[in-house]
Length: 171
Image 1: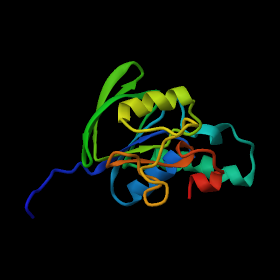
Image 2: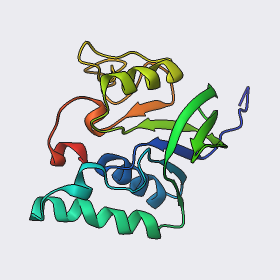
Image 3: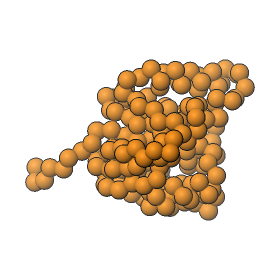
Image 4: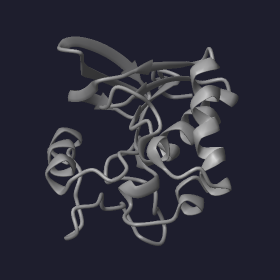
């Protein structure tokens, strides 16, 4: 190779709802270290308070799977305050319970669920990416790169795209 670039083989996932936990488990199952940052004091997002129906039972079961996976480190009460770097070599700072925590990672996945347009705008400024007119994250290209954000190494899943069902969220 002409050039070799160091790559940090881990991911920072912003959001600990169904989409974020599914992404975390998929990456961990492939052998990658995952930093799962959830702004609330517990994982689960909407699934945590959903009715006890078969549709939501699997989503709630994800919580135990994520908590028991040694490749996934969970940060509750966490908020992204800044990030820098490039694909394969990002350095971010999380505010976790009022303390700054540095995280090095190769990719970012936005899985923020039903966040407000204000919260999405704040996060979009930090990540330097665009939002749609509805306040959801704008894909790099709606047909060719529908889960990529405009910057290489930044992706989205679940309700960060816009409204969708639970099945679409974790597909």
